[in-house]
Length: 262
Picture: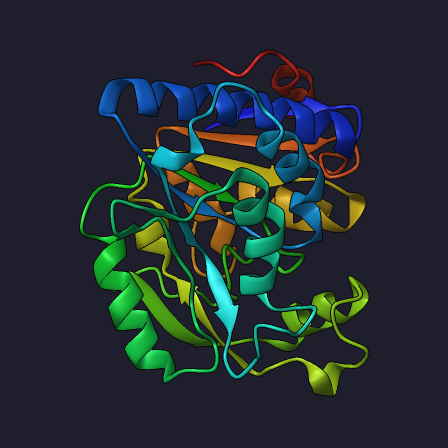
């Protein structure tokens, strides 16, 4: 894993977007198309703003999946990840339909979750994913794989139970007015499926993520620190700001501020 620490979340978002744009252009140049997975949530705002504004990316040749979605939540709800993806990526870039092929695959949280997981999952695994953009939750979750996460499943998407820490984060970020409003279940890309991406770019700003970042990088790799699984991927770049990196050992913080190896 390569680590980059920036001064603040705006600088983090810009640097991660420059990296992502470079990787997208390379995939498009080498393969003629690119397949990506996108994360959602407040931590991704600056990154996606910069990425969708980047020049010289032919989004008409990009195919998009997303990491997760709440079960039972309508697409019109402010917290819907379908709504988020539509507004913050699809409508900004013009991803849509090309020669009759759907270029984005949204998880319908109002449908049968097992059927949706199976159907979108079959599309997901039909060809390799070039780049996965991910975040890390306050409880260390990766996608909606809360601790203790399933590190063994080979299924591309799982229907999972959300723990209280995860659900409280959603309230604190302003997506829901109270804990009781946050769904108890979600459809989530599995840990093993995330790690199948050729490249992973993790965008993790803010002090509230510092404990999770510390666990990801300094504790044992395992289900109680789900994002620690990223250390098992040879081509992962983790972008932090000074606040989210604050609890890391001084030696790691010092080394991490060099350029990300490409």
